[in-house]
Image 1 (cartoon, rainbow over the protein chains, first blue to last red):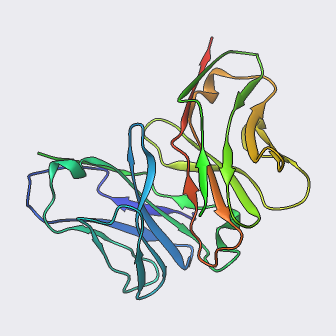
Image 2: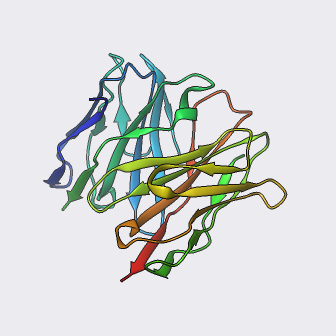
Image 3: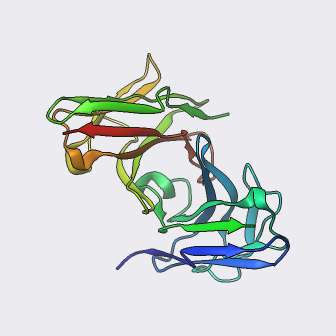
Length: 116
Length: 115
């Protein structure tokens, strides 16, 4: 089954404790992206990657890091989480290229992160 | 720069009535437009898209959307609402002039279908 898999689904952590949210897709997609969803703000893009070793900042990159060493994986790293990073996080992928997103993004099921 | 607006935070519709969820957009080039739906505790699911051609686009679950270039709108519609349509709906746009794959999402409209 074609899918984007995120782990964990739920995570409660303390301020300053480094964490990683994993994202993996099995569709050989070139484009991957991380979003955070907050009430009243919709989906805001954190980082995206157009291919292996190619990453770029989205609209709200502060406090986050990403890497794209393999095509299928795009982990989101919070080096020192803070309470304002409490949110619902989504990973998405698409085939990429100028026509890639025209079929739509495939989203993971989300990771609900709470930083206390 | 591209942008998308969903003017209604919430829409309430009685079951069996037609529904409309509004979306307007702004792009520099030709717009590529999308609707996604999010059910509770789930990720976003692709509903339908407009790339080119017929202004009326049909998608999943009986939904359709009408592209109106003069009004820069892409409203989501369904002739007869079901209680199971209750969810959060996102409109999204990609500027055809952009070479990257970036899609901008609206803030979402929560649709309540009343039994």
